[in-house]
View (cartoon, one colour):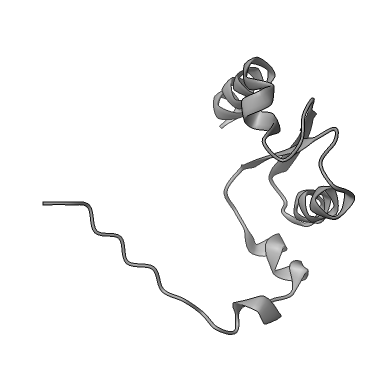
Length: 84
């Protein structure tokens, strides 16, 4: 017996507005790397600016900065979870 995951695909999701991020109520921890490509950094920044409970951290590394800078990421995650 394996794990079964069902995912609903919304074909209109790519037409969503970044303004809808204001409706997110959960705390978000967003990480971007110091050498992440600029367009990916911009995605993180837009989410961070528009989601009311978002925290953006920048770590040494690229798109996998949470792995490349694991100690700094875990410290930030611990603080994020403690803040609730």
